[in-house]
Image (tube, rainbow, N blue to C red):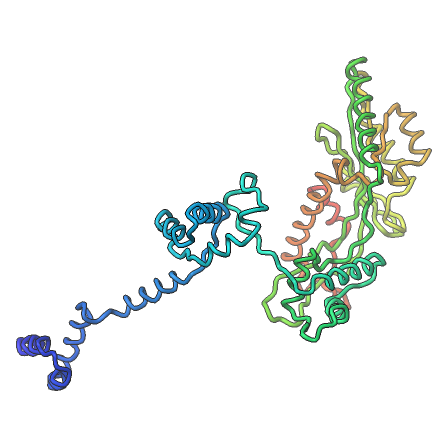
Length: 438
């Protein structure tokens, strides 16, 4: 080891390259390793870790930062005041030491950008907002014509696909350099606010004077409450009733699977399209009234099932599974007018524009029972009806969670199959219990 140290000291004193090579070759293997280790630890050779750090710093120096609007404003202001872009770079880099990558080119471009130094209200803009990069197209006029054609086609409810847009763009633009690439299509849809949409059914539409109708409805409710509560000291109990469809099979439309899977199969029940109707009602103090469930079948509800849910729910069946006049009359007589209002109370039932609600027989029943009633403006249930805005969705979500728990526990078991291989759907008793617990 002493001999090794002497050899190493002699090696350090030699500056000639050839002598250095001969001296190194004359060392033993252990000595060569020791020499290399000492050289690595010395300052004469950078360590691999230092090389990595140097490369990383060089990459960071080349990194482009996303400067805030406040930063750009300040840099342009200094450059204008001093009439020198380089002076602005030096001052900004000295002030913001954590950002050392600002260069003269950036300030020169910022000074030419009208959004930064002329037509932009800095006082009202958020100081941390980044500049919006606009996607400018060289075929702007042709794209306006393409947008017009898309609107015209969708106005007729005709299908618009990606291939149709690209083919029509090639025809409208008529430029050999235009390829209709995926990048152009993505930028075009962003520029024009176009996205892929799932077709929907007919939705409720508000009338042109819906604000006037809503105001009149609210004034009617206020007038009723003022007349009874303020002038006659009679408390008004406001209730709301609504019908909603519920599926026996509450499977979700989407499932999770691994990327690249070509075929996505889901085992569903044999009643994946069968529904039943629930008539739900609540009062303004949060009281839930007993519901009515209407099942789509010609068969009568077994007496054992009626006894099982006695005093909890009314069960009906018909060929459509929807609420009809006779069933809603039962609801008015057995549930709404059976609330036993006190002498200093008055009932007010809020109804939507469902045709059964507006029948003369229903109005007569409410009048005979000394119950007030009011109708929501057309198309405003999503805005004003409490059951639609706060209850129905949560009610169905809770039933779906119960269905998924049943599916995991029993529904997907091999012994729960029909002769054709479908999963057996939950029966009426199970679904009724879920709805009551929800």
